[in-house]
Image 1: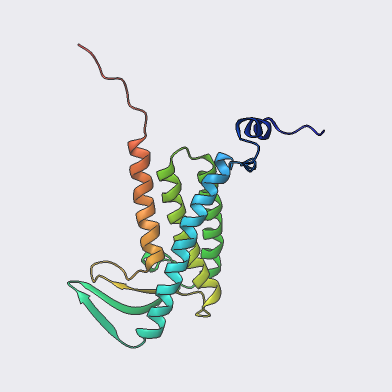
Image 2: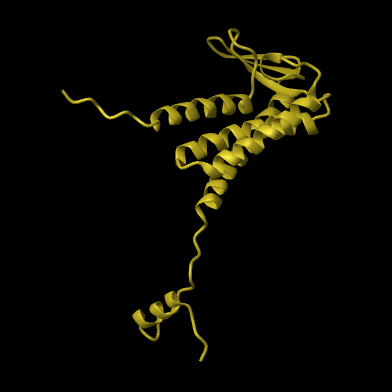
Amino acid sequence: MQERGTLTALNEEASPPHAPVRPERRRLEPAAARLAVAAAVAGVVVAVDQFTKQLAVDRLAGRTIHVAGPLDLTLERNTGSAFSLFQGHAAVLVVVAAGLVGFLVWGVVRSSSPGRVVALGAVIGGALGNVVDRLTRGDHGAVVDFVELHFWPTFNLADASIVLGCVALAVSLFWDRPRSPSRRP
């Protein structure tokens, strides 16, 4: 008779003879689990971002839709980075974004906070959403922007995900910082 794993042997001893033997479940290593969560968040951000950008391209060409208050939807293309900086340097922006994504993935692997992993996943997804535009849309590396607030540069869901992810990350880092022991009189 071959030797079996301890867990399988214990399952067989505890189970009646007619019960099926449960296979041994392998848990993901913590780093792999964190990467899976961040990848899932990033994947959702990229998918929704690309979907909304395609809707904007299909339905906003040559027109603006007023939604409410200062919120309008209007189609713009940005060959630069945030606030239209570095116009016409799409190749450099793609390289910088790839380096940033690599750094953020390293942060996911080292993170001890589930909230931080989700925040990093949102920033990674936003960066990748804009990289997809730069590499696939054929607009000389332009990113599709369509949310206009009139007091802020026009942006898209990827941009919003980057900003909200950074805010959540900052809150998480502030919240989890070591606190000095309180002084007693």
